[in-house]
Length: 454
Ligand SMILES: Cc1cc2nc3c(=O)[nH]c(=O)nc-3n(C[C@H](O)[C@H](O)[C@H](O)COP(=O)(O)OP(=O)(O)OC[C@H]3O[C@@H](n4cnc5c(N)ncnc54)[C@H](O)[C@@H]3O)c2cc1C
Image 1 (cartoon, rainbow, N blue to C red):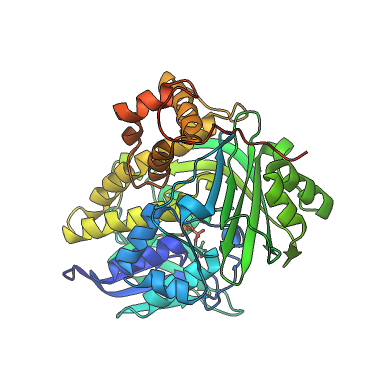
Image 2 (cartoon, rainbow, N blue to C red):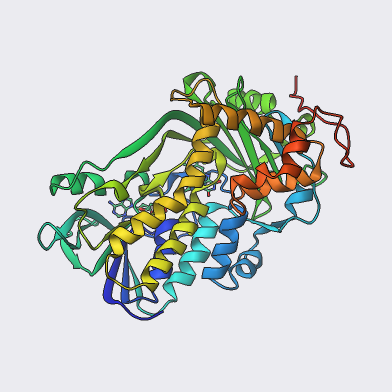
């Protein structure tokens, strides 16, 4: 990639910031990543509280990560990440249907969020021209008149630290949900940023555990929410011979408790019986950590008129989704690809081109997440005919995927963001999905409905 500028500054060293920095490193001579935490740790850190909870990298994200950092999968595995054949080692119950196992799917690399972030961060810090300015809060944008952002103001977090200015040709906001760029823009007279929001109030609770040696439950067990039961679980094997057991529920009535008895009975109500048995015999490795996620939130910067040049936004700061669908890190990967393509075309009109292309890339995951959320009667929001028809069809696809490995594979490719949703509308899929159970001719075991433990 040819150099198009001298200095880019990335705000936030979470996954989206690291991925953006990787892409910028070829196009700018220097890249500075400003981060409020001290980042030299492989542990969950304060600025990324979700790091304690299970994080699944979808297949599309895994592919892009390997493209951006060749050999990263090998490094993760070398450091202890778990390799799984999802078609065999993963157990998915979605919409109440136990999806068919399907050997031969792409391998999945499973790691905790802090470990994944650390491996990616080490690769980024080895790139020429990249430096971390950690232990510093970004407190505002610097401008060169109304039409251009020229850097940021930062405040060191140590006692007695004085404000510093960092000047740059390009500023990329990757400060996650807590980022304040939209407020700063409003204060500068550019606003408001149009937003779309679906209120959720999802509560998360996670405990790391070590299963008994003889437990045979697979490398990931996922039970998704469904209408009438707006709660779910993901138990994922990760490095360190551990499983991260995460449960989540919508609104105050369904949020998981964090006390011992409450957490146990919440898990018992969700987990398949054999999985619960293994969990009950497991060694707890820590207490139960809680997290609250308020809403799906999308900022439509591409709709703004007179947006100043020199500012881009990525990751959760641009759009964040109900974490239940595990899309966030993969979407950050997609945005890094968008950024790379925009940088390839040079500096001219970069801000506008980027926001337009990022919005296009976001449409599919956003619509999938919002439609799935609106399938829950507890979630407030407008359900147009398209959403209602799509949700009814997805329910039929999930039921068919319980008995038809071909449909299961196609369904996983769509939710893994490898194929677009119309792949589920191919005539061969539609006819099999709409057949009443038992009438299709695919070789299969009998349809199974998930049972919950007593
Ligand atoms: C409970 C939970 C579970 C999830 N599970 C999954 C999953 O299974 N799969 C998946 O793909 N995604 C998952 N996600 C989403 C995922 O964590 C994010 O989408 C993804 O990490 C991208 O985040 P980000 O880098 O944009 O923001 P973050 O990870 O939030 O990082 C933002 C960074 O900016 C820094 N920062 C913030 N403000 C400032 C400031 N003023 N100055 C300096 N630095 C600042 C923070 O310290 C932090 O390091 C989950 C999220 C939650 C909440």
